[in-house]
Amino acid sequence: MHVPSDIEIAQSCQMRPIGEISAAAGVDPQYLELYGNYKAKVDPRLLRESRRGDGKLILVTAINPTPAGEGKTTTTVGLADALRRLGKSVLVALREPSLGPVFGVKGGAAGGGYAQVVPMEDINLHFTGDFHAIGAANNLCAAMLDNHIQQGNALGIDVKKITWKRCVDMNDRQLRNIVDGLGGRMQGVPREDGFDITVASEIMAVLCLSSGILDLKERLGRMVVAYTYDGKPVTAHDLKAEGAMAALLKDALKPNLVQTLEGTPAFIHGGPFANIAHGCNSVMATRLAMRLADYAVTEAGFGADLGAEKFLDIKCRLAGLKPSAVVVVATVRALKNHGGVPKTELNAENLEALEKGLPNLLQHVDNIKNVYGLPCVVAINAFPTDTAAELKLVEDKCRALGVNAALSEVWAKGGEGGTALAEEVLRLCQEPGDFRFAYDAEDSIEKKINDIAQKVYHADGAVLTPAAKKQLTELEALGFGKLPVCMAKTQYSFSDDPALLGAPKGFTITVRNLKVSAGAGFLVALTGDIMTMPGLPKVPAAEKIDVDENGKITGLF
Image 1 (cartoon, rainbow, N blue to C red):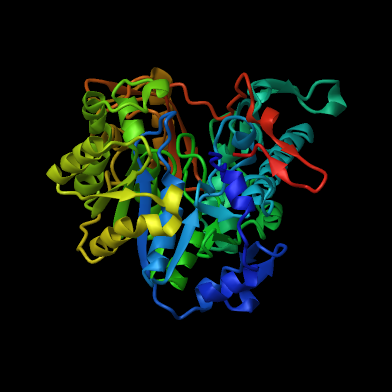
Image 2: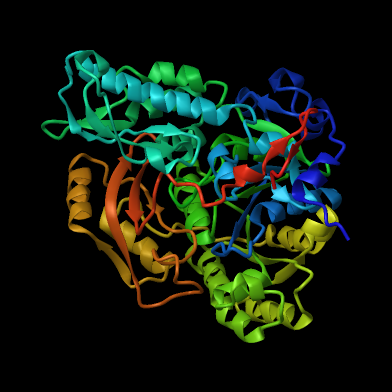
């Protein structure tokens, strides 16, 4: 029996014209900018001019990811379709996949099975060009910075203290560390340089957290790109770069409207990755979804210790958002993997390994309930190999924490398979929440980092390297000490060691680098071996991707 791939399912779907989808979402044509038949951008003026009240916000997050898969985006899409099947007014707001990971390591963000957003190929490739615009704006700033130095360096920039990197939307380890400006006096000033992947650019976070074009321009101007010989920060505003960057980003700022396989309106705008950056879709897309529907379903990147933490402690804090319910996605297979079972042996029932891996899920649930004070449900993303005994064990352990577990079969059945989950989410949305942050932004940088490490990761604390301590002192002296903290950490573990699965104890988090993203409005703490420019695996996904004479793509998921 042939099981269709994600792309085969997506290509067999009869998509509705985007005008029909926008009408269903309540978007007046005057706010719609068409990108072909099935994609559009929505003018954020709608937010200012709409008199409709905001709907409830539902956050979907997950356990720490494993090679076995969790299905967070799939669950998000399926939940939205299920709520719509129950007669509810609903929109979904997702993160936008970057091009680099699609061709490097598996990393699409369009869902899977019968719970996907379409056109899937477009979404996973160039889409509406947002990431290209982010890359262009980023590199414009880099070009203006180096040109300033070439033309006399009136600002006194120390070339050894340039923090701004160029970027490209492609995994390419060759570009991590380079020397540029070679070739003589007229070819630039020689210096060490390097590229980040586009999603690691501060401009991605700036775009995601901006409330409008003027706020975007102000945030771009505040970005620190270098330091002078006497240690003073140099901003994009000092380079007079923010206007041109904002001009390049003016269309990218507008959220993208598409549809699910079942015709539920979906915004896809900004976001990845929570291990190296902010990792949430744009505030504007989330707000539009809330303004247009009674229920807005959104997601955050990777596991709840990264994505949900940043969604709640950074995005909600800066944008004034408050979720009504949180869904934590898990699979029996992934939990068995956390319990020590290799990927090749996950099909067999193994209650012992499942019990050993369950603390990973339970710790995320405990964090959502008791650290953040939010109503929570566990979505068990169903696989055919799950046994009744395994499912019962997960349900019993969750119930002991005071949380219900709902079996989600959206991969195989679409919205129909998410009815139980949707009903529990609707129930939770009526419960009073006591939403609070994991830390007080007014506290010292070190205390904020320790609060995240101890409360969310359940570590013994954080250890700052001598270099990080020096950076901390400098950042506080420059007035950046009251900003929230964005932790750059492996997604595979609560710790900064990707090999420590489950819910490890007795560890510390090592912070090796601290920097400010002043435009985005947070500090970045780099832990462990996190890289902002990944490389390709031995067999890149690109080797399996092809297109025929009719333009039909194969091998993309």
